[in-house]
Length: 298
Image (cartoon, rainbow, N blue to C red; front, side, top):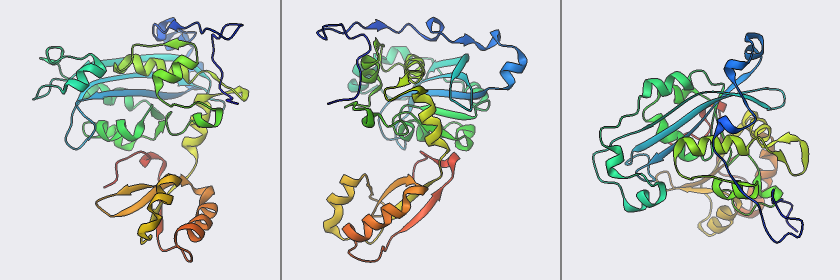
């Protein structure tokens, strides 16, 4: 039996009522300007960011749109109290967009003509943040770091990776699908709209803990020390086991690797020695600094 709930499910469970999320100004959050200076000073700052791109590989593709908004939260419990400044812009690139990108985002070549992202403005907002949050930071961070030095220094959090959606039975982690389960829908794949919908979603209470929000789950995970486990010298025949365990193949270095919480290392070591190496672990581990999480591997 799935533990997730459909918010908006009818009493006879034959229909779901959905509302369109119209943006942050229609939510129950305050504008940061409405808070007193002492209140503002007690809050931490999250910069939520999303990018639309010309393709998937940050090494060869470009950002075509960025959306960013500041949110203010209580560090102790993760309660989001207020929203702040936002920035959204398109970026012209030197080649036509792939038709798949046009279909996905609705952005046309003519929409980009003459447009440019002000990366100084992006950095101005990111520099105020205690944490930068994206729904797929493994994707967004490497793209943003091509243009932003501030993004390279900031700690990042990921609502895709650091909220355990599967533990509540959610079968898909896509933002637009999670939104439907929580009673609202969005115009997906436009950067600022996705940012605001994400932060709306993260304010919901966890299904098994009505005093804890998804955002607080993310914060707890983002603060835990991490290590990268490199299963070097692993036997070829163990590749399916490693893949199923959550390891990724790094073709340049030719090894399997995954990130885990440092506190889980002993359990992982025992599994590797029993299932992969049939003896002593022949790989190695590397500590991941909190502000280096979700960076692209060199």
